[in-house]
Amino acid sequence: MKTLQTMKTSFVLFISLILGGFVSIRANNLTITNTSVAGTNITFQISWENSWNTNLAPNNWDAAWVFVKYQDCNTKLWNHASLSTTVGDHSVASPLMVETVSDGKGVFLRRSAVGSGNISNASITLKMTIPAGTYNYKVIGLEMVSVPQGTFNLGGVASETTRYNSFVIDATAQSSGLSAATLGGSSVAIPNTYPMGYNALYCMKYEITQLQYVDFLNTLTYPQQATRTEYDPISAAYTHAFNVQSGSSYNNRNGIIILTPGSNAAIPAVYANDLTSTIENNADDGQNIACNFLSPMDVQAYLDWAALRPMSDMEYEKICRGPVSAVANEYAWGSTSIYQVYNTLGGLINDNTTTEQFSPVSNGRCVYGVGSSAVAYGPLRVGIFAESTTGRESSGATYYGIMEMSGNVWEQIVNTRDAAGAAYTNTNGDGTLSVNGNANQSSWPTTTGFGLRGGDFYNGSSYLRLADRSQSQWNNPNTRNFNIGGRGVR
Ligand SMILES: [Ca+2]
Ligand SMILES: [Ca+2]
Ligand SMILES: [Ca+2]
Image 1 (cartoon, rainbow, N blue to C red):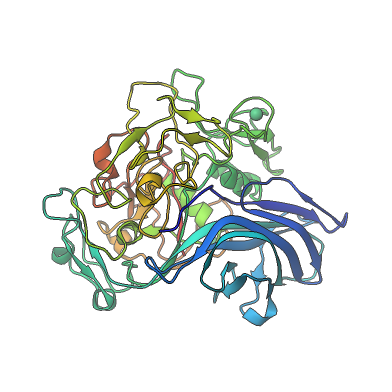
Image 2 (cartoon, protein in one colour):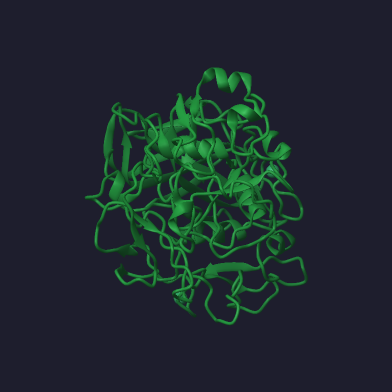
């Protein structure tokens, strides 16, 4: 297990072809700079820290999922750019390689050979397939981690409660489907089209952050924004996009605000991060804190827009446990070591910033269990426990190096308890939402088929167990709770 240091998340570059200028509007540890467009080629430099590609267990690599949004300067509407599916059409500097995808909705950039360390200003040119026009562009990068194809142990061990039956998921299981009796845990029968975690996938390294959600909102139309936030986009400047806790002025550490109100239900609002009010987009405005208050339909819309897909209930266990044996009552980091952390506990350093950290280092650090002991509670920065000296247990990483799969905000999954969940396939998002801002991909749940995994900053430790399925059916598609977020896979 390589060390996992600083979090890196989406970065947006906004450029104008009309002005011929290229201005980066934000920066964090995954950066995209020096962007230019020539014809249908978009060129930029990408940097991120602590990338890896290893031929030792877990035999995987990290990658940046990069996709391009372009805005028609006449209609002002944002579209998802298609990228060439031919590797040779793109130009990628060492030590990176490009991995194209068959639907052309983005590319993965990753180390071409075994190695580790920082990626520094690697030059990338991607070939887009877009109609002629005059556009603004946003290049967005999300950090992902590869989860290789392979068998794994589902279900925890016999002494644990609220779990799947214990058995091996292999190629035969995936190609044959599984009966309700085989699965156990209140499941229905699932066909061979349900993603069981046997096949290779990429998983977002972190929960969706508040900056990523702002970037998303700022490419939507007014009606889409209205669906994807709690308050109308026409609300006054500095209105929070999501709920204020009842009886309090506290927003559970969610700092997403309306910066410029929309108007006439036609011109969209401009959103920003302003956790430390009231000058937006400062270094301490919570950009890299996990985005909470996300309903199941909010997460699905984000994933459709990003051309990713929801994680299945069984994939959650594969991503956490990997191919090794289950440990009784283990958490996502593969042991029962646990050290409680929450934001009002003390020990938080650089609160609300992109370097928010917690001291001391200890095995099993996990954001959970604040309960009712404090009012001003909320999630922490994604990747907060991954430091230069931490390993799997002290950073809270899964077998593959994915962060906060136990604790912080709940993970959303597609369940195996409803017919609608069982009908889910591995259909990816296509970058485009319905007129009203909903995901509209074949087989994705709409009313039932939803579930939660991994616990959160508010509840106690039993939900953090990686085998725990006590909330694996949670059919509240439009409910926004202060302790629920999500992430995607592809
Ligand atoms: Ca501020
Ligand atoms: Ca989580
Ligand atoms: Ca869609």
